Length: 189
Image (cartoon, rainbow, N blue to C red; front, side, top):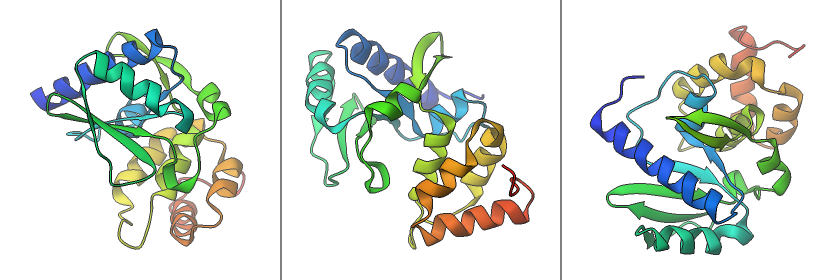
């Protein structure tokens, strides 16, 4: 990964948050582009923020812990995440991606992986792909980045579970159709 100064700042924030949440006993998992990268996807940098998932009932404790370390809590206009900043670095604490609440089971499926010399629970590849596919909408339907991620993570994912989780989304179903047409996945995946 080519790490410019912006990426290094994000990685420093990622490590600070992971350390803080672990110390405070807040269950969480890394998500977004850094999770995909930690699982072997090509870098999609420069990233602009650091994304974590956690259960909604843990958001208050997580924000309080981040504030204690000098980070700033911000007002989020969305009702599915909480926002904070580490200096100028945006942090998203996502508790209801694509309208589906983060569950303890989802967090338990996360795999501890080394991210820049820190052991961080990283979202399961299936859950990561479900989140990405559920994010497709008529206004956000660019398949190029997710296609690169899926190609890298396809063998780590439970495609039956992905399909079941996104069955109500015509955009996700279209993406799955494209994956089959490109032989990225097949009906036996």
